Amino acid sequence: MKVAVVGVGYVGLVVAACLADGGNSVICIDKDKKKIDDLNNGIIPIYEPGLTDIVKHNEKAGRLKFTTDLKEGVDNSLIIVIAVGTPSRDDGSADISAVLTVAGQIAELMSDYRIILTKSTVPVGTHKRVADIIESKTEVSFDYVSNPEFLKEGSAVDDFMKPDRVIIGTTNPAVRELMKQLYAPFMRKGDRLIFMDPASAEMTKYAANVMLATRISFMNELSGLCDKFGANIEKVRAGIGSDARIGNAFLFAGVGYGGSCFPKDIKALIHMGDSVGSEITIAKAVQQANYIQHEKFADSILKYFSGSGGTVRLGVWGLAFKAKTDDIRESPAIWCIEKFIKAGLQVSAFDPEAGRAAAELLGDKITTHQDAYDAIADCDAMVIFTEWQEFRTPNFELIAERLKKKIIFDGRNLYDPAYVRKQGFEYHSIGRP
Ligand code: NAD
Image (cartoon, rainbow, N blue to C red; front, top):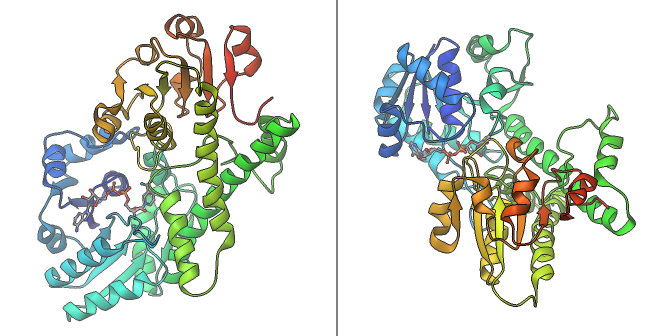
């Protein structure tokens, strides 16, 4: 099939590359000329495991092209995927202006029937607004599909290639058949397409993200209780995760969730509820618990060093909001580091992929390093924010050698407390005695 993907970000680039890998002819369009130039010069703008290989493979096979020219995509594709950003507005609502702009531009360029499909996460009812805009600008017939994306940064390629399910919001049976064909390469182990109306599809995306964030915030609040009563949140996690009704995923206590999706999608659902007088109190509590979790972790470190005299220097491991990505949007690490800097502490940091993005954001407020052990040299404590695999079994002798004081604050519960203490460290983690 011939497909255009508008918006070549964390979602759009993965979706485009995977669809091309499924045998489709895909044209990627972005308004960011530098991004498109980089992609045409073989530079992949984001870090995502496995992505570089499939982009290069499909480009070489002639199935994947990059351009800033929307017309080229609209002229040559039956299906046009919108995957532009939908950030939060100040009032918490999702800013869908980029989606609406692109929909209008597509309408003006369309000379024949097209299927417009939204991957961007958009508030319930957006399907009507997109359809209205297109109808106001063209007489050409079209269909609209709400097809929210559920991939996770860090495993995005795998998630797209082997989805748990694909949600398709359309009421047109002919479009349903086309969607079956589009996703057929990724359904070899069995059909996991779930068809519904567009409004339910839009709601499903928010429901999924808020449910997942709820699990995390619940575990984080429980971890505080574990601290008070001498219970161990890791044991509790294993205890409840083994219950088939609950399951193991998204039960890790830590410094709080971040990223470009959970925080903004929770805000958007809260706004949706408030705007129609149907308050989502759970989402409000989840959001508040997450801020408290960031704050508790940062404050515990500030309190530890308060009144210690002299300049305190922290050596940070992990800047990305989660492992296996270079994405620092709403990262708890950045949130806490800004608080540390404001309080007069110095920060030097390492992240396997996100160092550059953090340096660009924070400038000379922190120093970033290419080597994990250089980042903690002469520091008063080491602070862990991201659960990178390579942090899990570090060289504790080298850590001890580099640090000024053998203190670790672990926001991800990476180590066995007994083992680390045996190595002579003072070890602070989340919800473990
Ligand atoms: P992103 O910021 O990484 O990428 C968005 C891209 O769209 C950018 O490259 C930007 O230049 C481009 N763009 C914006 N306006 C444009 C326009 N008018 N014409 C052409 N290009 C334009 O965003 P993302 O993380 O890929 O997220 C995209 C959407 O997918 C959001 O709605 C998000 O909520 C949703 N989503 C994200 C994830 C994730 O893990 N990042 C997962 C599922 C869903």
